[in-house]
Length: 127
Image 1 (cartoon, rainbow, N blue to C red):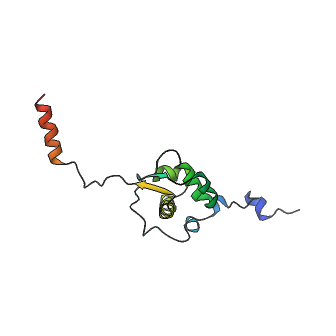
Image 2 (cartoon, helix red, strand yellow):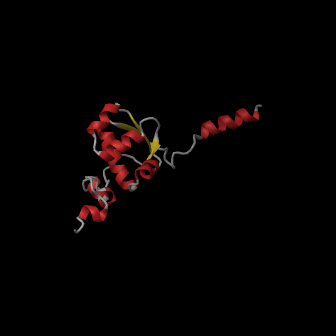
């Protein structure tokens, strides 16, 4: 008896796993109109645990990962084994829907306040 395609590929359930291309998960979006999401952007869930039942598998996985502690975009990508651009699109969707919030790292061009540094230096000199 010949094997069907599910047996050959090892997928007998509805989960396509790694055979699904990233653009299928993001519905063809490449992430051009994303929020200010950097690889170090921290994400944390703010919805209720019951909200997970309403979400697709990848969204629910991200929601659960960020439930008890903030994770960066790169950590989410590592845990979910998805490309970072895919994670950025999915996290952007979760942000827009109100399931997660985020905090981006400060910009590199936003250096320390020179007046504050001078005040600290003056304080040290007075010791």
